[in-house]
Length: 508
Image (tube, rainbow, N blue to C red; front, side, top):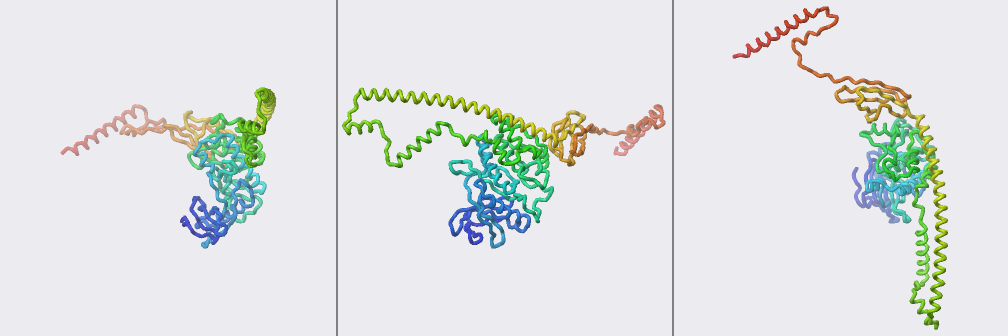
């Protein structure tokens, strides 16, 4: 795709300032509105893709979806137009910051409280989208932009509703046909990985859980050598537990992540609001210590005095003013004043200390009760997830010979002899390999518990053949041992004579 030069015009309303990035569907430019002088971002569809009705409709859908929601954590789309060459573009607010993918790359892992703060903003945006029956379906760190706003360095802007699905819209073009996988595999829900058509907002909640996993653990929940193996791993739904990778992750946060990533959508959080509520315990960004509150109060009062034109009063200034007014401070009066002030200060300090201790005890008791309730809730959530998983999983028991053989299912390495697989009703292939043996493939249908027994055959060893090898004893040959011995001797002599004749012919 050719990059537009600086100064190029878009629909006679926007002037191109510079090229920002290029993606799979098009390029993004910084532009200036000619009438208002406002800087914006313009996303232009690639010309060769603009001729495809399905992608053109998907591009227009992104504009409609993003502008219809109207949420502060979703990028604002302000205009939709096309160039003189009939290439469509949409105009949106210009952001300055970094993607969540860039943050994860630079810091490897994100501190849990910070990760939860980011995730709750994503969920807030999704709640507004799902209320309008709009499902994003391609949530990933690259589509989450972090900017500085209102003192928050991690203010979220959700991008790219390019493959959003409006559930109440009848698709004449059927942009996403049954069996077609649309989305980013790493953060894709199992039903989406299977190409199911009728997905709902719970695929977005799964993606948020996977993104949270990536942030707090420092790695993706699943990895595989190829695309099909990755889809298979996602469909099995057995990621490593976050606390095994990062002990700093709280049990409550781990339970929330694993529930969001449950294979069965019925075992997940059913709404973004429910997921957000479960994360409240691990979000510390809305809390401030008593010292921070007091400091803020003193600063506010100081600013009020400064605004009113009152200079801070110093000790020497106070004594000077009283002396000039004719009142000379006496040592006894000064001593009594200091004594009284000291007593009052001590009394206030003691009262504050007692009140603080009582408050601390009450807060600890409240936190202990809350933690117990959360642990009980987490245990219930895990039990529901296990029960739901049992309904959707099957056991494949594999007996192999030799026992050291390696097992793969659709190219993904698995550990036997008992495999927990998703009961998707599809046909899969189990491959058994071992050094020194011929590999063997065993197809199976993932519909119910079953067992497979596979014995590999050893690879044969080739050896030179001589005349004596031509005759092999057979049980049904009717030839006794004596006759066989005479015949083999005769064949050896014939071989020796043939070798001698060949040598005579080669002698000059």
